[in-house]
Image 1 (cartoon, rainbow, N blue to C red):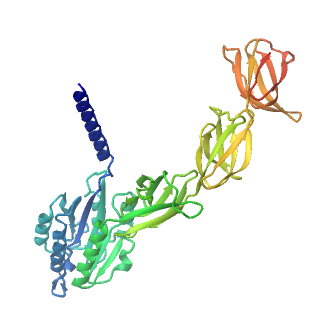
Image 2: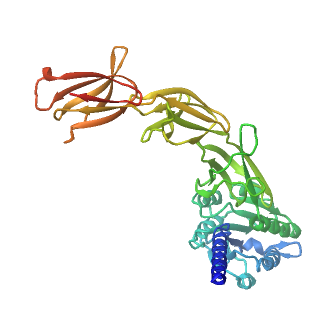
Image 3: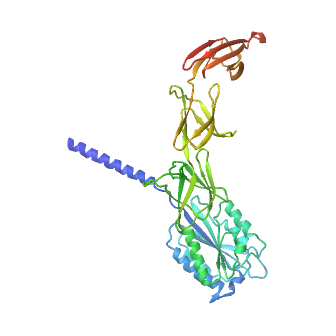
Length: 460
C-alpha cells in the first residue's frame, strides 16, 4: 500500500512540474514582429545613364541583388518590390508610372531578382506618387513593422511633394521613417525631410549604404529604462511605461517596468526607427519626449520618478470604507487622483493638498510625500447619527461653525423614514418640514452633537 502511495505522490509532483513548466513557457517574452521591407526602385530614364563601370541601373541591380542574397535566411522578414518609371517611355511624361511588381511574401528573393533583370529604365520620376501608392502594398498586420527603402538617382519630376507624402504615411502609422539611398549625386537637402538619407556617389558607397540601412533595420536594439529615485538611483519599478511614436502619437509599446534576477532594470526590445515620447504612469505621470534610440546598441534611458506613499486613518486605527479622498498638487485646482480612505497609494515625491470627502469635508494642506516613505493623514474618528423622521418632508443637515451654518446634506424623499450618517465629531443642526404641512412656520430645528465612535439618535 505504501508503495502505491509513493508512486501516486511522484506522479502528482511530475504533473505539477509539467504544469509549472508549461506556465513558464506560456509566459515567455512576446514574439518578435515581422519586418516587412518594401524596396521602391527607380527605373526612370536617367537610371540608364553611365556610372563608373556600367549604367546606374545595372550597377544598382547587381549590388542590390548581393544584399538580397544575405537576406534569404533572415527570420521574421518579408520583402516586396515596387518600381517606378519602368512602364512607359519619356517623353511624354507619365506621372502615374509605378507598380507593385513583387508583393510581400517569404523567400521571394529569387522572384525580385528575376523581375529586376527584366526591367529597362525608360520613364519619368514620380517619387511622391510611388510613395503614396506604397501605402497599399502592406497587407493588414497587427504585429509587423513596415519599412520603405527608396533607391533613386534623381528628384521628383511630377510636381509631387515626397516630404508631405512621407510625413502623412508616418503620421498615420502606416510605415516607419523611410530610408533613401541616392545614387551618383548628393540629394540630402531634398530628401532629409522624406526620411534618413544615405549618399552613394560611387559603387562602394552604394554597397556600404545598403549594408548600413539593412543593419539598422534588422540588427537587434535594446533599451533599459532606469526609473530614478530622489537619490538618482534606479530603484523605482512596477509601473507601466507607454512608448508613443513622436510623429503619429500612436502608442507602440506598453511595459510594466521590472527588475531582472540581478536587480537591474529589464532589457526591452525596441524598434530603433522611431523617435519616442515615453510616459511613465506614476501618479501624476512623468514624461520624456523626443527620445532617439541608437540602432544596434544597448540604450539606457534615465527618467526621474522618485515616489513615496500616502495613507489615511481615523484616530484609533479605524479604517473607513466608502470615503473618497481627492489628491491635488499643492496649490493646484486640478485633481491628480481620487484615493479611497482604506487604500495606500504611491505618488511622486512632492507636496500635495488633500480633500477628504467625509461629512463635513476635511482639507489638509501641504501633505509631504518623501522617497520610499509612507505619509499618513489622520482624521478624528467619526460617530454615527441616526435621523428618525416622523414623515417624509423637506430638510437638510448643517454643521455649526462659529455661529455659521454650513450645509452638508439634503434628506432623501424615500419610503424609509430613517437615515444613518457617518459624521465627524462636532455640533450639528437639522431643519425640517413635513411635505404635508404647507406653511414655513411648521419648520422644526433639532441641534445635536456627535462624539468620536458614538451613535446618537435624533428624533424629529
